Image (tube, rainbow, N blue to C red; front, side, top):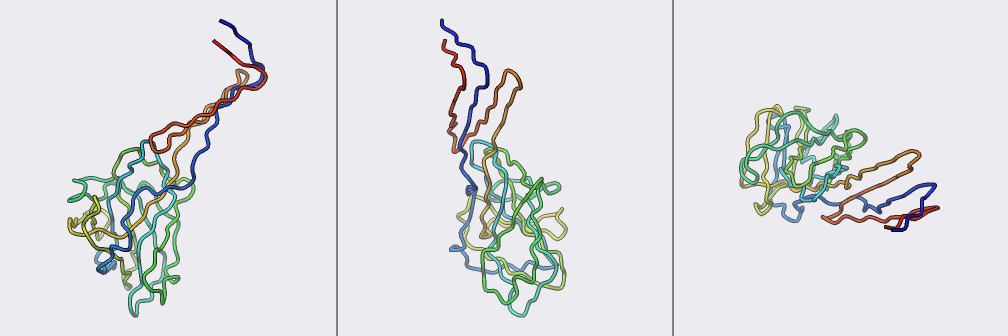
Length: 222
C-alpha cells in the first residue's frame, strides 16, 4: 500500500442541471372552463414528484383567463400542499401550505385570452419536495367580486382536481384535471471540513449520481 499525504484539499464537485419539469397536464387538453370565484377560491391539482431525489419547487403555471367583462384586482397566488386521499380519485390538499408563491397583480390579466400564467416560488418558499411523493399545487384567489377562468379537461393525468371554499374542506373531482406545470431544481448536499480539508457536493439527477473527484497537492492511492 502506498500513501502520499495531501496538504490542501479534496474536492468532489457535481454539475447539476437547472430547472426541470416535475409534472404537468398540457393546455392542449383544455376543453372546459372552471370558474374560480368566491364559491371556490381554492383550486387544486394533485401531482407526483417522480424524481429519485428531493426537488425544490421553483415555479408553476396554470392556464387562465379573467373571463369576459371580469376585471380582477388584488393578488393571485399559488400554494403547494401535502396530499391526502387516493391519488387520482379522492386526493386533495391537507394541512397548511408548504410553500406560497410570490404574488401576481391580478390586473395584469385584464383583456387577456387564455394564457399560461407563471407563479414563482422564491427564498424560503422553495420547499424541498420529497422524492417519489405526491403533492397538490393550488391556485388561490380570494377577492370575492371577480371571476378567474381556469382551463381543464380530460382525465388521463394520473392525479385529480379538487376545490375548496376555505382551504380546509375539499371537494374532489375524479373526472377533471387542471392544465398545469410544476418546475423545480434538484437538491444538492454540501459537506466541508476545515484543516482536513474536504469539500463535497453530491447530486442525483434522474436516479443517477454524478460525482467528479479532484485532489490538489497530493494523491492518496490504496
